[in-house]
Image (cartoon, rainbow, N blue to C red; front, side, top):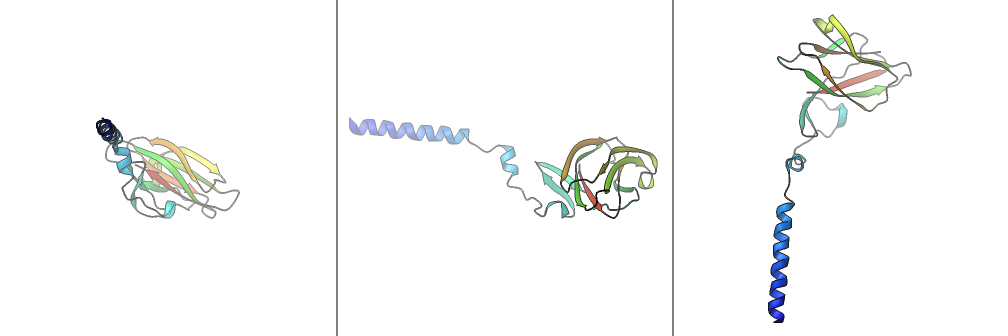
Length: 153
């Protein structure tokens, strides 16, 4: 009888283990964590920086007082700005502004989208803004004290 109860206990344990393992299977979000991420932070260059399972691109740094096109209008749809990453902000009068428009460096129909932000902290600014379809995204800083990049998709 003791052996029989021991066998029932062992089978019960194995069944519970199998049920628990089936319930604890990985989901898609967990599998995404196995993908390669760019590990150098906002100073890394290139595109396809993976953030929370979405493929994004990062612009080149902008540190110029001239309005500069940083994202061309997509062939279809809109551009979604996820973050503005301030890489350098050394002066209390430093600023950055995001604008959209068309033509060379957004010279036509220019509209301020975000900013000016004065004396920004050197951190990612989570903004989540859509650039209207058919519009380029441009950025402008005070040139000497502020440098920014934009993460978008």
